[in-house]
Image (cartoon, rainbow, N blue to C red):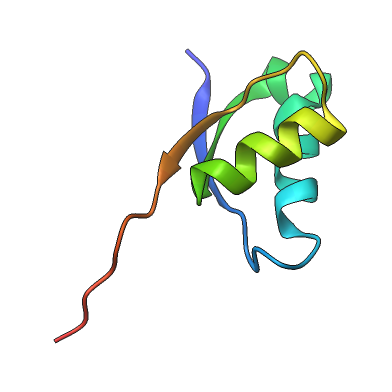
Length: 68
């Protein structure tokens, strides 16, 4: 059974989405663990389309956070 590791995409306007999808697509990681990306689905899909064509990472939306 592979480990599941959560990875935040970081700043949506920065390099974070690119690094997150590249890491998730890297065969070294894929052999060892399943990376689950957290962040805006549209931004992560676009980063995957641009930087890892043919690879669709698993991701979860962070949704709207509420602090009270």
